[in-house]
Length: 324
Image 1 (cartoon, helix red, strand yellow):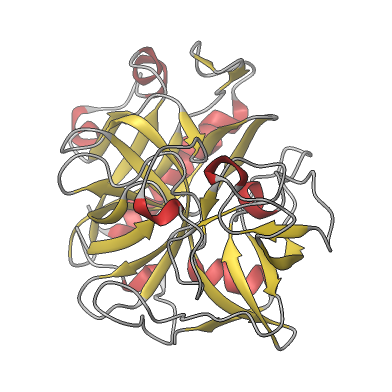
Image 2 (cartoon, helix red, strand yellow; image 1 turned 180 degrees about the vertical axis):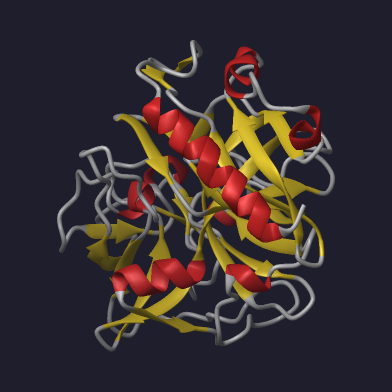
């Protein structure tokens, strides 16, 4: 269907979910309740899209799709992706060692967190800083501005006495008032005179301007470098995804306007890749900040990955992207 009609259908179903008196799903998500599916757009051609519906359990589809006619059902992309989790569990990888200069993809974390990924470099208030997730650098709202950040992260042997690389400067807090989140993001100002190479990535530096989600083509090929799975390739499978419920250690937070990515061969990411910057392969334009994923639901095996649009991250935290 035309992308505008797909957006109208998305809004219609979203309003229907809002009117629901009780949970739309009976599925249990890590101790929390996923009370509504995630809805987005799955590009299928120029100006055309299917409605992307992402569910925690197969039974959810029966509730959500009840009463829709066959014409509408032919225009939806329904997948059961299971639980979506913040990707922070530790696994071995070559990017987990203590490394100087600092480069994108390395293990990094707050001293109370296991490990995530140094996604890239930005300027905050004119100062050079590393970019990653709130749940990586700010311990999921538990940290304070001024706390140290380590490379590598503690689970990879990071020691506050010798491995401090920066100071937490800003993070977007998670909402607890029923409103959806837009980003899981934080920045840490790099310690003075610490060597770094922002452009040291497979294929060279990334573009200087973040890619707008409206410019993403169907099945856009993308890449990332993460602390756990290294350099991987995927394809954008849905954009403008609302209602992504993510299980964190301290509870479930819901996100709107997210980007969904499939791996080309197996999963695109795994635990510990949180914080990776994702870029478009064709022109190396930075697209998203990886923050969560599932174990199942991908087209090619594995799960799906979710990312905040990088343009949104930069806007929310008032940052300037540093390409090289």
